[in-house]
Length: 108
Image (tube, rainbow, N blue to C red; front, side):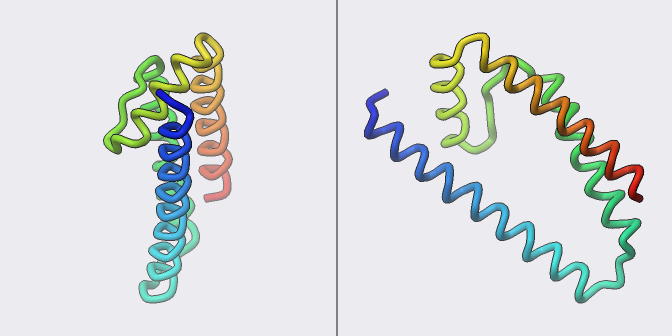
């Protein structure tokens, strides 16, 4: 991969991730505003979501596959570039998701 192609993939990644965050914030704001949902239910949903994410991270530890092609290409590039350090980052991300999930479960 050339540096210009990597730059284009990174820009797409940033746009995709920021768009996902804005959409998630908008949906959560709409759910809280228009539906009568308790904070217990919201924390429980977020805790389950993060727990499932951490389990998926542990199960597919060495896999760079994604249902979004741009993220899959970036993950393949990073795995090739970083080597064994990439696996450590993935494991650390899964562990931190599990930790945050347990904290959110305690809040609920």
